[in-house]
Image (cartoon, rainbow, N blue to C red):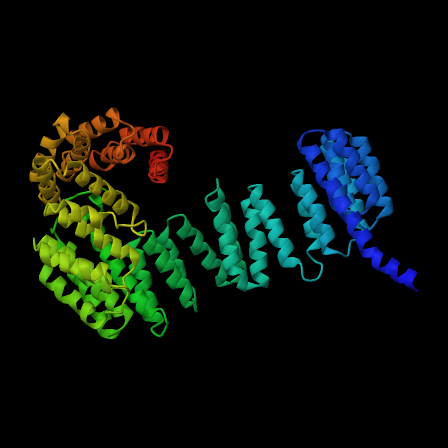
Length: 611
């Protein structure tokens, strides 16, 4: 009895030791393989195979190693043996067919795979495993054949059809892929979001749009199912044909509210403001009780503003770091303000109303230049909603109004209320500290300015963080040079106040003083961007050339190169030079933060030239 008990207790320790020995040998075999000591690795894998004959991981490693060494006959003999021992395991048929495929014997490979299918035709896994082996060797037609045969098994139609469609997509047979997705929707319309995403993967492919549109129209006409009309609308939207997409959507009976609202938001994000406005108006009229109506109204107002911006060409100047405010046609914004007033009246004391108030104030400040009206609207937020997320933003805008009115002390008051409030976001606090630091610079309180500027954190935008560090460096470097420091502070204040011509002259003087070294470079950059604000493009380009040409390691170099390219594109409308300068950015500044923007612009310019 004691002897039996001892043996029972001993068994787990023996098994543990055997398993540890197996794992050690397996790791050693992998090491030999990585070091290209293939004979040693093969011997160890064979030993491990003998220890555990049906260990698929080991057997796969051993077979791959044989094929890698072009020991095809040994691979065939090994796999034939495994098929005899384990005739129901389709993986061995897959591996054997794979060996023949590698030997360029496609016919034999398919014969072996077919034998594997016949060995276990009732299992869905069989069809999928064999299809995967076929795909591995780019034998896509055979993979589709297996999946087509298997998709009538219970509960696999959708999964197999998705697989088939994916293969058609990978082989650029976009019409066939689309047909498979349509068949899925006929059985399960709830798959619409997945199907839409899958089609979006290839709608931009060569000749893909025409193929997709043709198939979807056929299914729409033959079935009368509006789900295909919705998909046609989607591909129109994806290819920039928002007007046609909208016309199709409104033709769908009982269109779901979320579908139209999602379309409207996409159109707004793509700055298709006219279509977005129409879609949002339709949505609000047809689904007045939808939970998203309040936010839809705010988005509608924003889209209407976008329409006015487009009409007035507001976006034409926004690429510049500094630009003049043009109030020509600003009266058109009154219709947008009316919409915001309606929203605030319809949803009083709600986040939606306060968003409307803030947007209204922003229009008064930046478009209508009516600071009194803006301040009164912002006071509604600061007095009624001290816990609102917009409270800090409202204070910040109040401070900016005070700066525009040359009341720097009042501005500092609002900024302090912003960055000392625990409920205000870190990003808004950082922006407030940046502005507070600049005011202290303008007032020539050097040490206090630096103390404030270094508190600007990475929670703010990268541009503000970089600017804050730059100003702190300027102040620390030149605060002892009271004359030039005062000049720089004055010029910066003038530029901030929109007095670009006066600021430009002071920056020019500082830029041309070689004794200032660092301040010289900073003043030169500011001189260039004030020239841009005055539309003096050729003069600005000369300064940009000087900055980049003198020092590609300058803190401004990559941004200056980007601005130079954009000056050619948007200022001088010289697309040839714009392409060349954007290309230079990609080549000269591979780590620049502006790479993605330049690539996109180059791509847009290239596509434009093909039209």
